[in-house]
Image 1 (cartoon, rainbow, N blue to C red):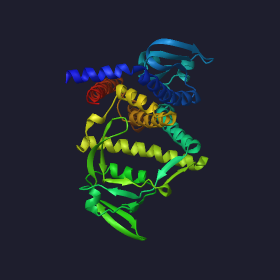
Image 2: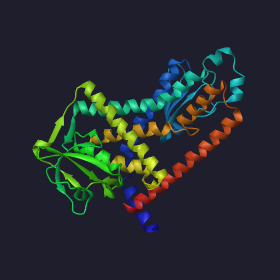
Image 3: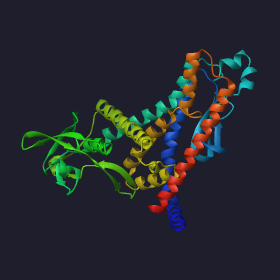
Image 4: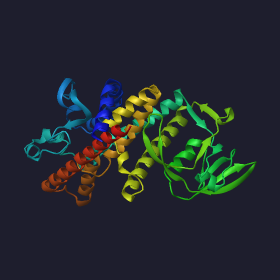
Length: 383
């Protein structure tokens, strides 16, 4: 195993430049928009902003704007932060001693002294900016390149598959699953992929008549075009590639935005379903990846073209926005949890309670990063 790991890491190192450049491109865009969301709302709320940083650690390059904010790029490009006046560190943990010593003018521009509503708005703005970015990218692709769709028509049925057991036949056109309308093969795949082991009522059009079939998708390990393994529910059918079943449609602005919202929601829904499946024992936690996996996938996707790389950027933006909303102290969701408690109690939690919460949050984040990195290394060893 150790030789496998060394071999995988060696291959990763050999492609370092090909992975690193797309990785930095994708991550920088996602992190910038997340932090810019915090920044914009904080400025609207009259909060003094000390630092806007892309990356952590020593500064590589930076400048001051006319408001006194230091904009910089730091040496470790694995995130970023906005530091407000009154913060003790980059995670917006308040400096209570400094806050208590502030005069009236300083209190007016201090983050910690703002009412709970503006503070919550500033914190929520980061994840919201990630969702807006994803919607904008998806919509932009739909308007400029168009959305290619393949009809949900069956071409072949695999032997001993869930589809064969359910009675599917070549030429069947899937029109609905459990009452939900199906417009494309992708629509069908999305529902089937997250319903392994569940019985689905699938309505098909066959010879001008509608027939309802009962099928239970099988959980299978599938490899994508880049060799990455995914565990998904499958029926065991292939799509029809006949000219009449394939179309590419460019969308108008409004339709593209609606499509962008739908794509963004699908990523959210799939992510939450996966996390729920991990806790329920239906999914394996080894699919959780960290920076190494993101870098590898970024390089692989970049080879497929700029549009594919932008699609990955949108997906990663949704994922980071959603992750930050989890109620874990140190993350945006943890801050929002504290603010919700403060709004209900009429006063903030004690300094001691907040300190304990942030320490617990730090431990959770570090453990998740270690676990994800371990998964990444094992993935490299087996890929």
